[in-house]
Amino acid sequence: VTIEQAPFVGNNNNIIVCNNYPVFDLFTLLGTGAITGGTWSPPLTSGTGIFNPAVDISGSYTYTITGNAICPTSSATIIVTNNPKPTIAPISDYRLCDDAVLGTDSDGISFFDLSSKDDEADGTQTGITVTYHLLPSEAELGTNPITSINSGNSTIYVRLRNTTTNCYNVTSFNLVVLPLPVIDNNVLFKQCDVDNDAITNFNLTQANDQISTDTSYTFSYHNSLTGAENNTDLVADEINFQAANGSTVWTRIMNTDGCIRTSQVNLVVSATIIPQTYRYTIEECDDYVDTSDVDG
Image 1 (tube, rainbow, N blue to C red):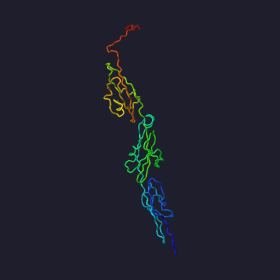
Image 2 (image 1 turned 180 degrees about the vertical axis):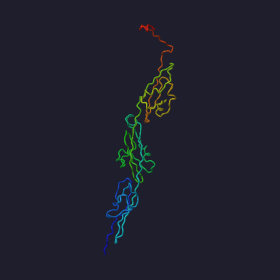
Image 3 (image 1 turned 90 degrees about the horizontal axis):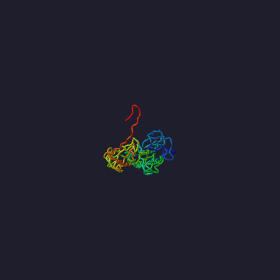
């Protein structure tokens, strides 16, 4: 009696991967002692047992060694579950005006609440956890997440992880700090009185050039500082604004980026003490100039 050893094709197995994983060899999943020289079905894109998660799909892949007259055909199956990575949607730049949360409002640093970008990052996907990182390597590993930052212009790296499959993807967006208008924030605006009552009409827009000479800025005038800060409580008529000496209005100045500053405008009514009926006469002797201008 002659006993032939049937070829060992390995053991059935399964694996769960994400479609952005590196390629791997299905043969290694058959276990120790599997005989080489078999075939895989259905065939993979590589034509061999190399599984490429980027192009090969989930399914049952069978490794077969054809039998002979004595030993039957042997096979083992590897079940591959290839989960999709989260979809990346473009994330717009996070643009904020300079602020004084840290430092001054002219140092190019603002406070960014990164969680406000969550909805934009995951889009319509569900079951996605979004984290933010300072380095691309941290985003890949999911380490050192942050939720907010005081920062100047920089790049933030975003990790999107599917909470069910743990598949992840990485993207990024830019933090952009916008400068505030450059202005004089406390100006003195004088207007002459016409009837000596220390009250007159001001054309407030004439104070624009005292506040800033930048013609790209937009100006509006308000009765209170809170109104200027919140774009409310506008003066009734900025062209003909009646005010007494010592009155104050506030200006809201906006640049083309939508960043604002406010300026206090102190109104001064310059009243003359000379009566309107007063006349002053200047006398001078006539001089001879020449024959065409002999007198007068």
